[in-house]
Image (cartoon, rainbow, N blue to C red):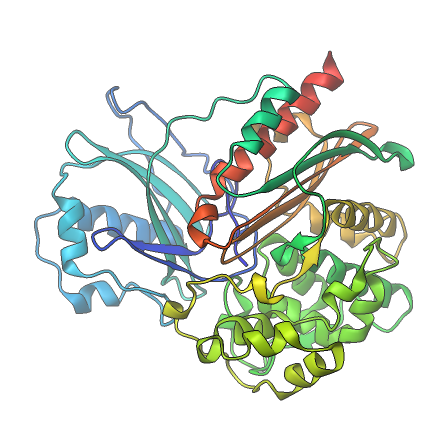
Length: 468
């Protein structure tokens, strides 16, 4: 689904109505958005300092953030119609005038930081009476608000100074979490750090690594090409994250562009288009060659739209049947799912579906093997684009992005699930870092920063070890 972590390039499509404290999660299977890069205009100051001028770019998301800032800093009455025109048709919640009034009570709000790209941006605001908040906004292909999160600004994270300190920090997280670091230089499989349960567990959109592998295999055997065009149809459109679901049916997109969107912004429609192009069975056939120890956990493979339909469609009516079904019975369930556009209200996305086997499952070792396998594919002429695709959004902190000479990433999330798998290099050395967490209570994993800050710490400790 959709994934983000503070100080990264993507944000979960979670909308928070501040006054009512209602939280609505769009299950978006992504590392975020259109690889929102840190703005060159980003300026950060302490709430106690005189605020510097922060420039909000004239991008699609920048325009919506500018409107939001004006709305919370003005006394001009707002109408429900005026607010609604800024939200897209699939946005889970349209804020009401009272919601804005609750924020306006803290006027004046000062903008102290902005970071973002074309479709994903986060602005930080502070007030002497209202506190400090980060407002993240994601817009759709038409520039309308698709998702928004309003969260209290947190104190700066203090990195763990050692591996034992990092182990203690991971063990103290609200939900059970595994974090592994493995050096994979020149065929090595040398464990550097491991904490938590390393058995297979829900992993969200990191399963898309195997779809990418199946695409690369299809190009290798000549049944697909990177410049071949795929057609968007209503039967292949999934739910956000991504942008392809917003394009008209009949639009053609190359395999290369589709694969890039599947990995960099975890576009669900792109994923289902690629599964259809290579065949579901061919993706399943890549599980074992790419190192998955127990492929049966993901057979039959669920397209992303099926995940939404099974997990939250019809108020979760299919959950028990899927959980208790044999592989053949599950195939029949998939075959019977309705075609056409998926229409599930955002209010349905409340309770996790992974306890009913409605997710995708992998272990840290599985994810590590998949990343290494993809890098091997990238060494061939036909598989060369794979390396660049994985690196479109490396999801590294600024400090790590300066030190590592290459970074590849795929993240994943669902209701109650977060995961991330990284392949990083510094010159001639390479490491894989994985993180997975899940909870029966979705609130336990509602703050991605809690779980990805330790990943940042692990990256810094890799650098420390390598340079000491």
